[in-house]
Length: 310
Image: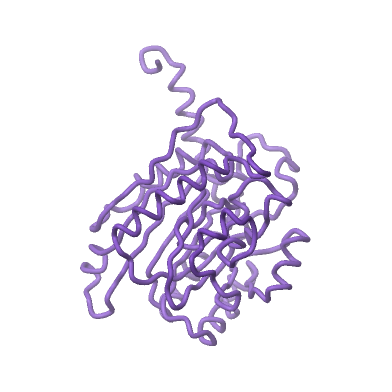
């Protein structure tokens, strides 16, 4: 699932695109590394990289899942060095104090504060254009009435639907025709109805593996100029990629409420993104939902060892 944290800051531009199921390069509320890049088509790749803002957003409150904090920190460490500016949204480290449920949403006030701080950082770098490609197993279109964790509300809010505190942060909602959800399968009844009611286009895992024709046709049919890609790692098969919520060690079969789990592998996702970049200019990239279980468990063990731990 997502976070209201898959996209974190909302921008006004003529066209915005969301492809897959996640959030948009606009409002971040989950564990993710967020990259906004503002290239000039005439500039070199080196020049474009130097104009890329890398935004580290170690948010864990959107999914009420403290391990996402470490997941974001590790993503920042794993990523190749940035030639452009690097900023980090200030996020308090997890504690044993439970997040309060405020007006049916867990951690509402801290999430809204983080959105504002992330937006301030991005606006300081004055991005001129932004679009979105959403790759995710889940559509993230729920509201507090269905689920109190806001990481499942993001795309709905970006479309202008959902909780008022989230939708008012979107200065220009994304038109449904500019949204493609890739990697989605077996949505919950509310999600399936939302997709049908709003005419959202989708591409199943098998269709992605077969060449992602629905995605490519959507790109060619649309008037989209630039694209931001939102990649929720839970689109990956938890049997083959283990740093995911659904790959929790010792989990039971029904521990996650029988929601859909990812069916793609890394080569499938890379092929999709590579094909998309032949059609549209990518100006933003978000990586979300990194859950490094082994690193987390090792970290906890180290804390309890003599000489090493505190």
